[in-house]
Length: 489
Image: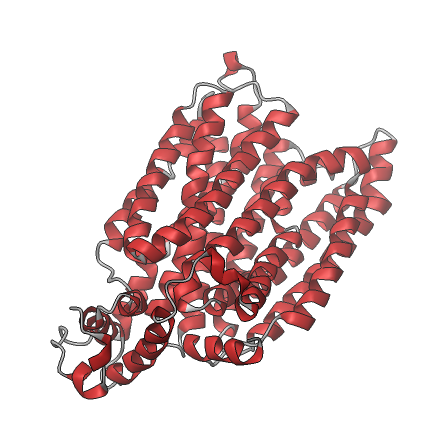
């Protein structure tokens, strides 16, 4: 129901049609679960390639695609290129057509991409299908956190958005576990096709689940559909909550922003908007320059260099998924208790220490053994795996959950889709560049120098975070926006 802006008052809002009976908090958790199936797909589709690549490198007469080393990098990074553009496009679509409709469309793209990769007859088709799948992955990474942040009450917002990170790493664990099970139980040249095809199941589940989720009150309010906005608030808040008061706060910001015209690229010239964009894109890039996806995508390669056989490396990779899920569960618990900025800095510091340790193990044990034509001792592979797990614990318990929570918070209402799209676009661009370059760097200069380079970059990331990233916990989205307007006008 649309109401003229000029007559929006508490009394006027209170007379809007009543929603159905208020829904209990359990329903909100189920809503969050339905939406974050998009995160599960994000995780599965980015993680499954680690197990599929060894099969895809086999000759065509053995069921593979006869991939060269460069083709492996192309197949891996093509999804990430698609994800970069998917994030940019989905942000605008979410602003224009709504968060709910955008996620429904992404579910269809997930399905098409999954089936395309599973049925690909050659390299060109595989790359094209991975780009399509990447559009959905990037779109989900930009839209799902915003969808959750706008539906959730401010005191629970961090928890609900952190659920998305938990679902991402659960998807990766599911991919690693599925890869290991299929590798050890299915004797077929097309095992990798089964790995990729299984992503179609959660894609269908996402499409069904989001049909049961309402559009966000903030998106409705931005279009003066205050009756619909109030209905969503009443259905997603516990009994006794002042939904009218919350809507008044949302309406005030939406009305103020609508009076200036809808935000687009030209508004990036405003000082406070530019500042927010620097902060948002910086947070997004920090998560990638940690080097997390070099471990998530290339763990079998690293463990192979450290002395493990291929099957053993694939099985050991499951430990990465388990620790990632445990870390995400820890992050889900502490994101409500620790300040966001503190979590960010703690995560970066732990990651820096892990990178230095990995560099030392490769310099002192792995590379000398390889140079001598020997297989590194078993203890070395365990040390590499152990430091990888420490890295992932800090990444998934601190850095990753707070990254997506803060990204969902820092951009203003009318710029939220565009700002999130730009930030996540750069996030995926950095991911693609690092993922393509990592195996080349390891081959050219060795693991010790490569991990040391990541450590140096992370020193710069810590410095950036300390100097520019604001605290956002315990504040409404509208309060965060108002503060930036005043401080950086």
